[in-house]
Amino acid sequence: MDVYEAVRSRRAVRGYTDERVSREVLQRVLSTAAWSPSGSNLQPWNIYVLTGAPLAELKKRAVERVATGVPWDEPEFAMYPSALKSPYCDRRSAFGKQRYGALGVAREDWEARQRAAIANWDCFGAPAALFCYIDRDLGPPQWADVGMYLQTVMLLLRAEGLHSCPQMAWARCHESVAEVLSPPEGLILFCGMSIGWEDCAVRDVRTGRAPLDETVTFVDG
Image 1 (cartoon, one colour):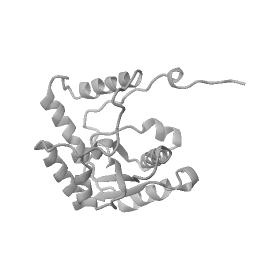
Image 2 (cartoon, helix red, strand yellow; image 1 turned 90 degrees about the horizontal axis):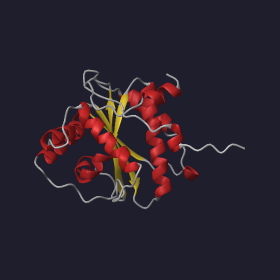
Image 3 (cartoon, helix red, strand yellow; image 1 turned 180 degrees about the horizontal axis):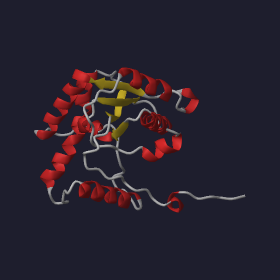
């Protein structure tokens, strides 16, 4: 698979088979992703990979927590600005409509929306998951470096025939994740990422993108 095909075929997949992802493949992907760029080569990503019993335990804790209405943990960073302006709020709203519309869930059907959301905490059935931490003393440029690293991981997973779904939602229950992973105190959980083989029987729709002239300006010499 060439890089263009990897980019075009990468999407947030929310349905996986239980087929195991081998340790060898995960090591190959993450060893190669280590070559992602970072300012002054800081390499600010701190990665934990869960499979098997540890992942099952985390899924169990998270699903039970959400299902019983335990409040979210105190946020350690803002996922979105409190006042999200246009065009960003418009794109977010369109995503929500498309996502829940594909599932046949009406906006006012809160229970159905909750059931769909709970699938996050089961990693959509994925047999492997990655959790990405960053040192709390680092700044926005290093968070950008982490984003480039995660994109590299996702593209390399496509090269292996695998799919993924990055999930900032895990930051909402970072204390539950820490109970299983025991990360150093100085780290902040940025996101999780479900990893596995796509279950093509799961209903899915790919979110569109803005036209090029809406996000790119060419300044010709």
